[in-house]
Every structure is written in structure tokens, then in C-alpha cells.
Image 1 (cartoon, rainbow, N blue to C red):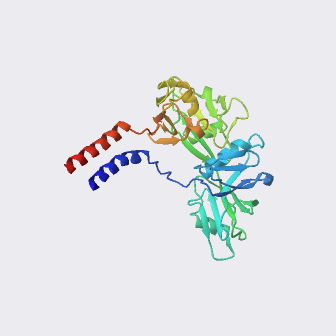
Image 2: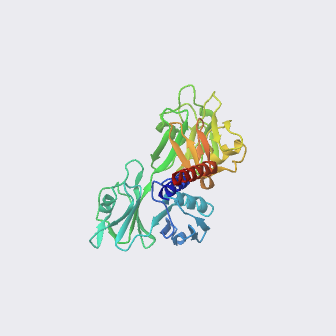
Image 3: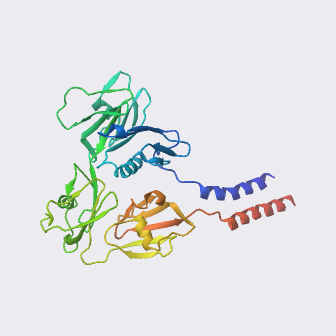
Length: 365
């Protein structure tokens, strides 16, 4: 009987091992979390919310929102998109509600989280030090927010010479804003993500990426992919000044793409889609658009929760297609790969069980 149980356990382990989900790798919002939504300079849009058992929050302006497994930044971006129809460039912060004796330090710091201290209050700079200080490349030290009881106390410029001590009390939230984050892609010398102070011109963004690749990049049809999913085409002169004056700005979350002046650009769509293959594009497109080119539908056995983007540098980014179809971008030369949804290999399971039963019968004889 003992051997029989061992073989049955082995057969069932084949199913359990293949169905085990991958580790999230980072903290994500879950049921029971308490969050504070803060819209800077618009306190009437602020609200404290509790993540319900079904993974949703109820925000008075947008209704029920599914936040289960989202990061704080992903939820912030979702709220910004939802509020854009009501406010101009809403500045939204999402912070966990700290315990009474803690201060929460978040945003662009080395180790965001809750930190306790013994005294009645602590200096703002010391609070930042508890969280590993601000990140040098991405932190906007001209916009360090102090939030108390859900309301913005003040925004401090910590690049100025140190003045009087800024007191942070238990239960306060310190939030370091991110510099304007933009991406420059395509036929430039050093494509990548850059952090700058405030919106910048297209010419300045190109200079950050080392300028265009000689005889390849086209200044006549640069593309700006806005954070809201819209697309604009602009033209620059050889000295990177705009043909249109003033130049249209590259803002937070935007992508500036330099197409190849001579080569047709393509993206690959592979895996469990109706028509896998290479598809021509004009600059970066959303993953949803790339899949539309491949037949406008994925197969029934496709795993929508784990869709992979193989980047130009060989790295692989995983997205949830149900949530990020319109926001995740794939660039020319990159690949979208749709994998199969997990299915139990019943022939393998039955074969293993049958083998276990047969061996047990032989042992009994």
C-alpha cells in the first residue's frame, strides 16, 4: 500500500507542479489593504479606500475598480487615465494608510515602506534616509510632498539650501515625485528611458538619446506616442529645431520614435494567435494593435494573463493582456508572444496512474 500511495502521489504531483503560479516578485495590492488616494491641489478628489474581498475598490468618481495584484504605480496610472476626462494633467498619489506609529515614505526612494521612530516627530530628510534616500536618476527633489490626514500639507523643494527643520509626525506620508519619464526609440544612437525635469522639446529628447543614426533616421516623420494612447507626427530640421513653433512637448509617459528612413519596420506576433507572423508598423504600437494585425483575436486556449514582449535587448517583459492591451507598447523589431493556457496532460496522468496500479499489482503477486 505504501508504494501504491507513492506512485499516486507522483502522478498527482505532475499536475500540481505544472499548475503552480509564478511568484509575483514584488509586493502587489491585495484584499484587506487600505489605500489613500490623493489628487494634489484638488483635495475634493481624495478618498480612503479599502480593497474588498473581491479585489476591488470603490472610488466615488470612477466606481468599482479591480486592483487585485496591481502595483501602487499601476493603480496610480489607471486613476490618472480615468481622471483625465475630469481634470487637466491630474497629479495622483496612491499610498498605503500607515499604522499609527509609523511614517510611510514612498515614491522615488530606495526602499519605499513604513518606518517607525521613537520620538514624537522626525526631520523630513531623516525620514527619507530611513527609506534609503531618494533615487538620484528618477527622483524630482523639487517636489517632495508631505501628506497628513489625507491632505497635502506642503510640497518642498529639497534642492534649495537647507532651511529650518521640516517636522514629520507619526502617521504622515512623505512622497517623492518622479521626474518626467520619457522613452526615445527607433533609429537613435542610444535608445532608452530618460528622466528629466518637466516636459521637454522633441529636439532635446533626441539629444538625450545621442541624436539620430546617420543616414537611417528620418526627421521628417517623427512619432510621438502619448501616454493616453494617442499618436502625433512631427517634423524637425537638421539642427533639431521644430518646423512647427513652438515644438510640441514630450511629456511624462510619452514615447518619441524615430522611424527608419528606408527600411520597412515590422513587429513579430507569435504563439497562440490566429495568424502568427511579421507585420509592418509605423513606429511603436500597442500590444492590442499588434494582435489585431495577427487576426484580431487570440485562440481560445491562449493565456491572456501572461503575454510576453521580447525587447530589442533580448529581455522579456510579461504583461496581463486583459489590463494592458492598450498601454503596453511593442517597438519595431520586437516580438509579442502569446503562450498557451495551462492544460492538464490527461494522457500523461492516466499513463502514470496506470503504471502505478500495474506495479502495485505486480508487487502484491
